[in-house]
Length: 502
Image 1 (tube, rainbow, N blue to C red):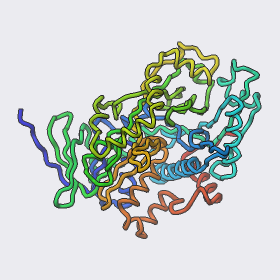
Image 2: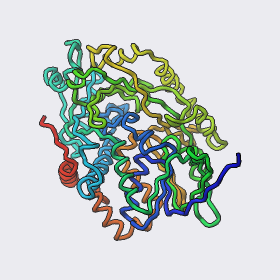
Image 3: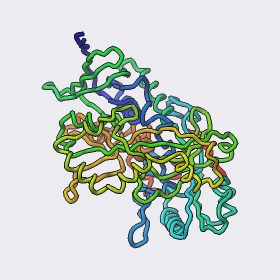
Protein backbone atom coordinates (compact mmCIF):
# COMPACT_ATOMS: atom_id res chain seq x y z
CA UNK A 1 0.00 0.00 0.00
CA UNK A 2 1.45 3.34 -1.05
CA UNK A 3 2.15 5.71 1.82
CA UNK A 4 0.18 8.95 1.67
CA UNK A 5 1.77 12.30 2.42
CA UNK A 6 0.09 15.36 3.85
CA UNK A 7 1.65 18.84 3.78
CA UNK A 8 0.97 21.01 6.80
CA UNK A 9 1.03 24.80 6.85
CA UNK A 10 3.98 26.55 8.42
CA UNK A 11 4.01 27.68 12.05
CA UNK A 12 6.16 30.14 13.93
CA UNK A 13 6.70 27.59 16.70
CA UNK A 14 6.55 23.81 16.99
CA UNK A 15 6.46 22.17 20.41
CA UNK A 16 7.25 18.45 20.41
CA UNK A 17 5.58 16.70 23.34
CA UNK A 18 2.40 17.72 25.18
CA UNK A 19 3.80 17.72 28.70
CA UNK A 20 4.30 20.38 31.36
CA UNK A 21 7.38 21.87 29.65
CA UNK A 22 5.75 22.44 26.25
CA UNK A 23 2.58 23.69 27.94
CA UNK A 24 4.56 26.20 29.99
CA UNK A 25 6.61 27.44 27.05
CA UNK A 26 3.54 27.62 24.83
CA UNK A 27 1.60 29.78 27.30
CA UNK A 28 4.60 32.02 27.97
CA UNK A 29 5.17 32.59 24.24
CA UNK A 30 1.49 33.18 23.50
CA UNK A 31 1.21 35.68 26.34
CA UNK A 32 4.40 37.46 25.26
CA UNK A 33 3.50 37.49 21.56
CA UNK A 34 -0.21 36.79 20.86
CA UNK A 35 0.44 36.79 17.10
CA UNK A 36 2.59 33.65 17.18
CA UNK A 37 1.25 30.56 15.44
CA UNK A 38 1.99 27.37 17.36
CA UNK A 39 1.78 23.67 16.49
CA UNK A 40 2.09 20.97 19.16
CA UNK A 41 3.01 17.42 18.14
CA UNK A 42 2.22 14.64 20.63
CA UNK A 43 2.73 10.91 20.05
CA UNK A 44 -0.02 9.78 22.44
CA UNK A 45 -3.77 10.42 22.39
CA UNK A 46 -3.86 13.21 25.00
CA UNK A 47 -1.71 15.70 26.87
CA UNK A 48 0.24 14.77 30.01
CA UNK A 49 0.22 11.03 29.44
CA UNK A 50 3.93 10.39 30.12
CA UNK A 51 6.15 12.13 32.69
CA UNK A 52 3.59 14.86 33.48
CA UNK A 53 0.93 12.32 34.44
CA UNK A 54 0.14 12.37 38.17
CA UNK A 55 0.96 8.67 38.62
CA UNK A 56 4.21 8.96 36.70
CA UNK A 57 6.00 11.64 38.74
CA UNK A 58 6.68 12.50 42.35
CA UNK A 59 4.16 15.35 42.31
CA UNK A 60 5.67 16.77 45.46
CA UNK A 61 6.14 20.31 44.34
CA UNK A 62 9.91 19.89 44.59
CA UNK A 63 10.83 22.82 46.80
CA UNK A 64 13.92 21.27 48.46
CA UNK A 65 12.37 21.97 51.88
CA UNK A 66 12.88 18.41 53.04
CA UNK A 67 14.39 16.47 50.11
CA UNK A 68 17.74 15.55 51.60
CA UNK A 69 19.48 14.70 48.31
CA UNK A 70 19.65 18.42 47.43
CA UNK A 71 21.87 19.18 50.44
CA UNK A 72 25.01 17.08 50.22
CA UNK A 73 27.41 16.93 53.15
CA UNK A 74 30.97 18.02 52.31
CA UNK A 75 34.05 16.14 53.50
CA UNK A 76 34.63 18.77 56.18
CA UNK A 77 31.12 18.19 57.55
CA UNK A 78 29.58 21.38 56.17
CA UNK A 79 26.34 21.28 54.19
CA UNK A 80 26.03 22.36 50.56
CA UNK A 81 23.01 24.67 50.26
CA UNK A 82 23.41 26.08 46.73
CA UNK A 83 21.25 23.51 44.94
CA UNK A 84 18.52 23.53 47.60
CA UNK A 85 18.30 27.33 47.42
CA UNK A 86 18.20 27.26 43.63
CA UNK A 87 15.38 24.70 43.58
CA UNK A 88 13.43 26.46 46.33
CA UNK A 89 13.65 29.73 44.42
CA UNK A 90 12.68 28.07 41.13
CA UNK A 91 9.61 26.52 42.74
CA UNK A 92 8.51 29.92 44.04
CA UNK A 93 8.86 31.28 40.49
CA UNK A 94 6.68 28.44 39.24
CA UNK A 95 4.06 29.25 41.88
CA UNK A 96 4.08 32.90 40.80
CA UNK A 97 3.30 31.88 37.22
CA UNK A 98 0.64 29.39 38.33
CA UNK A 99 -0.89 32.13 40.50
CA UNK A 100 -1.09 34.30 37.38
CA UNK A 101 -2.80 31.49 35.47
CA UNK A 102 -5.22 30.83 38.32
CA UNK A 103 -5.94 34.20 39.87
CA UNK A 104 -5.45 36.61 36.97
CA UNK A 105 -6.19 34.62 33.82
CA UNK A 106 -8.53 32.15 35.55
CA UNK A 107 -7.29 29.36 33.32
CA UNK A 108 -7.51 26.78 36.10
CA UNK A 109 -9.03 26.52 39.57
CA UNK A 110 -6.09 26.16 41.99
CA UNK A 111 -7.99 23.58 44.03
CA UNK A 112 -7.88 21.32 40.98
CA UNK A 113 -4.07 21.02 40.94
CA UNK A 114 -2.31 22.35 44.07
CA UNK A 115 -2.86 21.67 47.77
CA UNK A 116 -1.11 22.49 51.03
CA UNK A 117 0.55 19.34 52.36
CA UNK A 118 3.32 19.70 54.98
CA UNK A 119 6.75 18.35 54.06
CA UNK A 120 8.93 16.46 56.55
CA UNK A 121 12.40 14.99 56.72
CA UNK A 122 12.68 11.94 58.97
CA UNK A 123 15.94 10.18 59.84
CA UNK A 124 17.25 7.68 62.38
CA UNK A 125 20.72 6.82 63.68
CA UNK A 126 23.34 9.11 65.24
CA UNK A 127 25.04 10.01 61.94
CA UNK A 128 21.83 10.88 60.10
CA UNK A 129 20.49 12.88 63.05
CA UNK A 130 23.68 14.96 63.11
CA UNK A 131 23.35 15.51 59.36
CA UNK A 132 19.72 16.66 59.62
CA UNK A 133 20.52 19.08 62.43
CA UNK A 134 23.39 20.60 60.46
CA UNK A 135 21.16 20.85 57.41
CA UNK A 136 18.52 22.65 59.44
CA UNK A 137 21.00 25.23 60.78
CA UNK A 138 22.49 25.77 57.32
CA UNK A 139 19.11 26.46 55.70
CA UNK A 140 17.15 28.29 58.40
CA UNK A 141 19.17 31.47 57.79
CA UNK A 142 17.48 31.94 54.41
CA UNK A 143 14.02 33.43 53.96
CA UNK A 144 13.21 30.72 51.42
CA UNK A 145 13.35 28.24 54.32
CA UNK A 146 11.64 30.45 56.89
CA UNK A 147 9.30 28.23 58.91
CA UNK A 148 11.49 25.13 58.87
CA UNK A 149 11.33 23.40 62.28
CA UNK A 150 13.74 20.83 63.72
CA UNK A 151 13.08 18.44 66.60
CA UNK A 152 14.35 15.25 68.19
CA UNK A 153 11.40 15.10 70.58
CA UNK A 154 9.53 11.81 70.13
CA UNK A 155 6.18 13.16 71.35
CA UNK A 156 6.30 16.01 68.85
CA UNK A 157 7.23 13.70 65.99
CA UNK A 158 4.46 11.29 67.04
CA UNK A 159 1.94 14.14 66.77
CA UNK A 160 3.30 15.09 63.35
CA UNK A 161 3.70 11.58 61.94
CA UNK A 162 1.66 8.95 63.81
CA UNK A 163 2.10 6.23 61.16
CA UNK A 164 5.87 6.70 61.17
CA UNK A 165 6.14 6.47 64.96
CA UNK A 166 3.74 3.64 65.82
CA UNK A 167 5.66 0.50 66.72
CA UNK A 168 9.07 2.18 66.43
CA UNK A 169 11.97 1.25 68.75
CA UNK A 170 11.63 3.71 71.70
CA UNK A 171 15.42 3.83 72.12
CA UNK A 172 16.21 4.58 68.48
CA UNK A 173 17.82 7.98 67.89
CA UNK A 174 15.51 9.95 65.57
CA UNK A 175 15.01 13.49 64.28
CA UNK A 176 12.66 15.32 61.93
CA UNK A 177 12.18 18.67 60.26
CA UNK A 178 8.84 20.10 59.23
CA UNK A 179 7.81 22.73 56.68
CA UNK A 180 4.17 23.75 56.58
CA UNK A 181 4.66 25.59 53.27
CA UNK A 182 4.91 22.27 51.44
CA UNK A 183 2.53 21.48 48.61
CA UNK A 184 1.26 18.61 46.49
CA UNK A 185 0.93 19.37 42.77
CA UNK A 186 -0.97 17.45 40.11
CA UNK A 187 1.10 18.37 37.07
CA UNK A 188 -1.14 16.37 34.78
CA UNK A 189 -4.21 18.46 35.62
CA UNK A 190 -2.19 21.67 35.35
CA UNK A 191 -0.75 20.66 31.98
CA UNK A 192 -4.13 19.78 30.51
CA UNK A 193 -5.58 23.10 31.68
CA UNK A 194 -2.78 25.02 29.96
CA UNK A 195 -3.33 23.12 26.73
CA UNK A 196 -7.06 23.83 26.88
CA UNK A 197 -6.17 27.50 27.12
CA UNK A 198 -3.74 27.26 24.20
CA UNK A 199 -6.28 25.40 22.06
CA UNK A 200 -8.77 28.23 22.61
CA UNK A 201 -6.69 30.29 20.14
CA UNK A 202 -7.48 29.71 16.46
CA UNK A 203 -3.78 29.84 15.53
CA UNK A 204 -2.69 27.16 18.03
CA UNK A 205 -3.13 23.55 16.91
CA UNK A 206 -2.42 20.46 19.02
CA UNK A 207 -1.91 17.33 16.92
CA UNK A 208 -2.16 14.00 18.75
CA UNK A 209 -0.94 10.61 17.48
CA UNK A 210 2.01 12.36 15.79
CA UNK A 211 5.23 10.34 16.08
CA UNK A 212 8.01 12.69 14.95
CA UNK A 213 10.62 10.69 13.06
CA UNK A 214 13.00 13.30 11.67
CA UNK A 215 13.83 16.99 11.64
CA UNK A 216 16.26 19.00 9.54
CA UNK A 217 16.99 22.58 8.59
CA UNK A 218 15.71 23.53 5.17
CA UNK A 219 17.40 26.01 2.83
CA UNK A 220 14.73 28.56 3.73
CA UNK A 221 15.87 28.51 7.37
CA UNK A 222 12.79 26.67 8.59
CA UNK A 223 12.95 23.40 10.50
CA UNK A 224 11.24 20.65 8.53
CA UNK A 225 9.72 17.85 10.64
CA UNK A 226 8.54 14.51 9.33
CA UNK A 227 5.97 12.64 11.41
CA UNK A 228 4.02 9.40 11.18
CA UNK A 229 0.39 9.75 12.17
CA UNK A 230 -0.32 6.69 14.31
CA UNK A 231 -4.04 6.78 13.50
CA UNK A 232 -4.02 7.31 9.74
CA UNK A 233 -0.53 5.85 9.12
CA UNK A 234 0.16 8.83 6.86
CA UNK A 235 3.47 10.62 6.66
CA UNK A 236 2.98 14.26 7.61
CA UNK A 237 5.20 17.33 7.35
CA UNK A 238 5.45 20.34 9.62
CA UNK A 239 7.62 23.45 9.33
CA UNK A 240 8.48 26.18 11.83
CA UNK A 241 11.03 28.89 12.53
CA UNK A 242 11.55 27.63 16.09
CA UNK A 243 11.32 24.11 17.51
CA UNK A 244 11.26 23.06 21.15
CA UNK A 245 11.83 19.39 21.92
CA UNK A 246 10.09 18.70 25.21
CA UNK A 247 9.36 15.02 24.74
CA UNK A 248 10.69 13.74 28.06
CA UNK A 249 12.75 10.61 27.50
CA UNK A 250 12.06 10.96 23.77
CA UNK A 251 13.95 14.26 23.54
CA UNK A 252 17.45 12.80 23.16
CA UNK A 253 16.80 10.78 19.95
CA UNK A 254 15.12 13.80 18.34
CA UNK A 255 17.89 16.14 19.43
CA UNK A 256 20.39 13.78 17.82
CA UNK A 257 18.44 13.90 14.54
CA UNK A 258 18.69 17.70 14.49
CA UNK A 259 22.47 17.43 13.91
CA UNK A 260 23.15 20.71 15.69
CA UNK A 261 26.78 20.85 16.95
CA UNK A 262 25.59 21.64 20.48
CA UNK A 263 24.00 18.17 20.72
CA UNK A 264 27.25 16.27 20.23
CA UNK A 265 28.42 14.06 23.09
CA UNK A 266 25.09 13.85 24.89
CA UNK A 267 23.73 10.46 25.90
CA UNK A 268 21.03 9.11 28.17
CA UNK A 269 20.78 6.59 30.98
CA UNK A 270 17.18 5.35 31.42
CA UNK A 271 15.77 4.60 34.88
CA UNK A 272 12.33 3.15 35.58
CA UNK A 273 10.21 3.80 38.64
CA UNK A 274 7.53 2.07 40.73
CA UNK A 275 5.34 2.99 43.70
CA UNK A 276 3.62 1.10 46.46
CA UNK A 277 0.05 2.37 46.63
CA UNK A 278 -2.00 2.01 49.80
CA UNK A 279 -5.40 0.31 49.43
CA UNK A 280 -6.51 0.74 53.04
CA UNK A 281 -8.69 3.86 53.38
CA UNK A 282 -8.23 4.12 57.16
CA UNK A 283 -4.44 4.28 56.78
CA UNK A 284 -4.71 6.84 53.98
CA UNK A 285 -6.92 8.96 56.22
CA UNK A 286 -4.45 8.80 59.15
CA UNK A 287 -1.49 10.18 57.21
CA UNK A 288 -1.31 13.71 55.78
CA UNK A 289 2.29 14.48 54.94
CA UNK A 290 5.19 14.05 52.56
CA UNK A 291 7.92 12.33 54.55
CA UNK A 292 11.38 12.21 52.99
CA UNK A 293 14.26 10.05 54.15
CA UNK A 294 17.83 9.49 53.01
CA UNK A 295 18.54 7.49 49.87
CA UNK A 296 20.58 4.33 50.09
CA UNK A 297 24.23 4.64 49.14
CA UNK A 298 24.63 4.25 45.37
CA UNK A 299 20.99 4.95 44.54
CA UNK A 300 19.97 7.75 42.15
CA UNK A 301 18.34 10.95 43.47
CA UNK A 302 14.97 9.98 41.99
CA UNK A 303 14.98 7.03 44.43
CA UNK A 304 14.93 9.15 47.58
CA UNK A 305 12.18 7.36 49.54
CA UNK A 306 9.09 9.22 50.69
CA UNK A 307 5.80 8.29 52.33
CA UNK A 308 3.69 10.54 50.24
CA UNK A 309 0.18 11.97 50.55
CA UNK A 310 -1.13 12.80 47.08
CA UNK A 311 -4.32 14.44 45.87
CA UNK A 312 -5.06 12.91 42.46
CA UNK A 313 -8.24 13.84 40.62
CA UNK A 314 -9.72 15.06 43.89
CA UNK A 315 -9.02 11.80 45.74
CA UNK A 316 -6.53 11.43 48.59
CA UNK A 317 -3.91 8.75 47.93
CA UNK A 318 -0.91 7.39 49.86
CA UNK A 319 2.20 6.22 48.02
CA UNK A 320 5.63 5.00 49.05
CA UNK A 321 8.68 4.97 46.85
CA UNK A 322 9.72 5.38 44.19
CA UNK A 323 11.55 2.13 43.68
CA UNK A 324 14.07 2.43 40.87
CA UNK A 325 14.74 -0.16 38.23
CA UNK A 326 16.86 -0.85 35.19
CA UNK A 327 15.32 -0.44 31.75
CA UNK A 328 16.31 0.26 28.17
CA UNK A 329 13.13 2.24 27.43
CA UNK A 330 13.27 6.03 27.21
CA UNK A 331 9.50 6.39 27.65
CA UNK A 332 6.90 4.41 29.59
CA UNK A 333 5.16 3.75 26.29
CA UNK A 334 8.46 3.49 24.42
CA UNK A 335 10.58 0.72 22.92
CA UNK A 336 13.12 -1.58 24.55
CA UNK A 337 15.46 -0.58 21.69
CA UNK A 338 15.46 3.13 22.70
CA UNK A 339 18.84 2.94 24.45
CA UNK A 340 20.57 1.11 21.58
CA UNK A 341 19.07 3.46 18.98
CA UNK A 342 20.40 6.49 20.89
CA UNK A 343 24.01 5.38 20.42
CA UNK A 344 25.96 7.48 17.95
CA UNK A 345 29.62 7.92 17.09
CA UNK A 346 29.96 11.13 19.12
CA UNK A 347 28.30 9.79 22.32
CA UNK A 348 29.45 6.16 22.50
CA UNK A 349 32.64 6.97 24.40
CA UNK A 350 30.96 9.34 26.92
CA UNK A 351 28.23 6.74 27.55
CA UNK A 352 30.71 3.89 28.02
CA UNK A 353 32.86 6.05 30.31
CA UNK A 354 29.87 7.09 32.39
CA UNK A 355 28.81 3.44 32.58
CA UNK A 356 32.23 2.34 33.82
CA UNK A 357 32.20 5.06 36.49
CA UNK A 358 28.69 4.10 37.64
CA UNK A 359 28.78 0.30 37.80
CA UNK A 360 27.50 0.31 41.44
CA UNK A 361 24.48 2.32 40.26
CA UNK A 362 23.73 -0.16 37.48
CA UNK A 363 24.01 -3.03 39.95
CA UNK A 364 21.70 -1.20 42.36
CA UNK A 365 19.06 -0.58 39.65
CA UNK A 366 19.08 -4.21 38.56
CA UNK A 367 18.71 -5.36 42.18
CA UNK A 368 15.77 -2.97 42.60
CA UNK A 369 14.10 -4.37 39.50
CA UNK A 370 14.42 -7.91 40.88
CA UNK A 371 12.83 -7.11 44.25
CA UNK A 372 9.82 -9.07 45.43
CA UNK A 373 6.71 -7.49 46.98
CA UNK A 374 7.96 -8.48 50.43
CA UNK A 375 11.34 -6.84 49.74
CA UNK A 376 9.55 -3.58 48.96
CA UNK A 377 7.40 -3.90 52.08
CA UNK A 378 10.57 -4.29 54.17
CA UNK A 379 11.81 -0.97 52.80
CA UNK A 380 8.46 0.65 53.64
CA UNK A 381 8.65 -0.78 57.17
CA UNK A 382 11.47 1.66 57.96
CA UNK A 383 8.94 4.49 57.54
CA UNK A 384 5.80 2.66 58.64
CA UNK A 385 6.78 -0.04 61.20
CA UNK A 386 3.27 -1.53 61.48
CA UNK A 387 2.77 -1.90 57.73
CA UNK A 388 0.76 -4.88 56.45
CA UNK A 389 1.68 -6.30 53.08
CA UNK A 390 -1.92 -6.85 51.97
CA UNK A 391 -2.69 -3.11 52.30
CA UNK A 392 -0.34 -2.16 49.46
CA UNK A 393 -0.12 -2.79 45.72
CA UNK A 394 2.57 -2.04 43.16
CA UNK A 395 1.95 0.59 40.47
CA UNK A 396 4.33 1.53 37.67
CA UNK A 397 5.62 5.10 37.61
CA UNK A 398 7.18 6.94 34.67
CA UNK A 399 10.50 6.56 32.89
CA UNK A 400 13.38 8.97 33.44
CA UNK A 401 16.42 9.44 31.21
CA UNK A 402 19.36 10.87 33.12
CA UNK A 403 21.79 13.04 31.17
CA UNK A 404 25.22 11.78 30.16
CA UNK A 405 27.62 14.53 29.09
CA UNK A 406 31.03 14.46 27.50
CA UNK A 407 33.73 15.30 30.04
CA UNK A 408 37.38 16.07 29.30
CA UNK A 409 38.71 14.38 32.43
CA UNK A 410 36.44 11.34 32.80
CA UNK A 411 35.26 10.93 29.22
CA UNK A 412 31.61 11.02 30.25
CA UNK A 413 29.68 11.93 33.41
CA UNK A 414 26.19 10.99 34.54
CA UNK A 415 24.11 13.88 35.84
CA UNK A 416 20.78 13.84 37.63
CA UNK A 417 19.48 17.32 36.89
CA UNK A 418 17.98 18.90 33.79
CA UNK A 419 19.89 20.30 30.82
CA UNK A 420 18.72 22.79 28.19
CA UNK A 421 20.53 22.28 24.88
CA UNK A 422 20.04 25.18 22.45
CA UNK A 423 21.23 25.78 18.91
CA UNK A 424 23.62 28.70 18.60
CA UNK A 425 21.21 30.54 16.29
CA UNK A 426 18.34 30.10 18.75
CA UNK A 427 16.09 28.22 16.32
CA UNK A 428 15.95 24.99 18.33
CA UNK A 429 16.08 23.96 21.97
CA UNK A 430 15.69 20.64 23.75
CA UNK A 431 15.26 19.68 27.38
CA UNK A 432 17.10 16.63 28.67
CA UNK A 433 17.12 15.03 32.11
CA UNK A 434 14.65 14.60 34.92
CA UNK A 435 14.63 15.78 38.55
CA UNK A 436 13.48 18.28 39.73
CA UNK A 437 11.79 18.76 36.37
CA UNK A 438 8.16 19.85 36.48
CA UNK A 439 8.46 21.83 39.71
CA UNK A 440 11.04 24.12 38.12
CA UNK A 441 9.40 24.18 34.68
CA UNK A 442 8.91 27.95 34.61
CA UNK A 443 12.56 28.75 35.39
CA UNK A 444 13.68 26.20 32.81
CA UNK A 445 11.44 27.70 30.13
CA UNK A 446 12.68 31.20 30.99
CA UNK A 447 16.15 29.83 30.25
CA UNK A 448 14.90 28.61 26.86
CA UNK A 449 13.46 32.07 26.14
CA UNK A 450 16.75 33.73 27.08
CA UNK A 451 18.73 31.35 24.86
CA UNK A 452 16.43 31.45 21.85
CA UNK A 453 14.70 34.84 21.99
CA UNK A 454 17.48 37.06 23.41
CA UNK A 455 16.51 40.31 21.65
CA UNK A 456 12.83 40.00 22.53
CA UNK A 457 13.74 39.26 26.16
CA UNK A 458 15.54 42.62 26.27
CA UNK A 459 12.52 44.50 24.95
CA UNK A 460 10.39 46.69 27.18
CA UNK A 461 7.20 44.90 26.11
CA UNK A 462 8.42 41.41 27.06
CA UNK A 463 9.98 42.58 30.32
CA UNK A 464 6.75 44.27 31.41
CA UNK A 465 4.64 41.25 30.47
CA UNK A 466 7.03 38.86 32.26
CA UNK A 467 6.77 41.07 35.36
CA UNK A 468 3.00 40.74 35.19
CA UNK A 469 3.16 36.97 34.94
CA UNK A 470 6.14 36.49 37.28
CA UNK A 471 6.41 39.47 39.68
CA UNK A 472 9.92 38.53 40.86
CA UNK A 473 11.26 38.34 37.29
CA UNK A 474 14.70 39.94 37.06
CA UNK A 475 15.15 39.89 40.84
CA UNK A 476 16.37 37.33 43.36
CA UNK A 477 13.99 35.70 45.81
CA UNK A 478 17.02 34.00 47.34
CA UNK A 479 18.86 37.25 48.10
CA UNK A 480 15.90 39.53 48.88
CA UNK A 481 13.98 38.38 52.01
CA UNK A 482 11.28 41.07 51.66
CA UNK A 483 10.63 40.12 48.06
CA UNK A 484 10.44 36.44 49.02
CA UNK A 485 7.95 37.16 51.79
CA UNK A 486 5.71 39.35 49.64
CA UNK A 487 5.84 36.85 46.77
CA UNK A 488 4.76 33.98 49.01
CA UNK A 489 1.93 35.98 50.53
CA UNK A 490 0.62 36.87 47.07
CA UNK A 491 0.86 33.34 45.65
CA UNK A 492 -0.72 31.78 48.72
CA UNK A 493 -3.72 34.08 48.30
CA UNK A 494 -4.09 33.55 44.55
CA UNK A 495 -3.54 29.78 44.78
CA UNK A 496 -5.83 29.46 47.83
CA UNK A 497 -3.08 27.74 49.81
CA UNK A 498 -3.65 27.48 53.53
CA UNK A 499 -0.45 27.21 55.53
CA UNK A 500 -1.18 24.85 58.40
CA UNK A 501 -0.68 25.99 61.98
CA UNK A 502 2.51 24.53 63.47
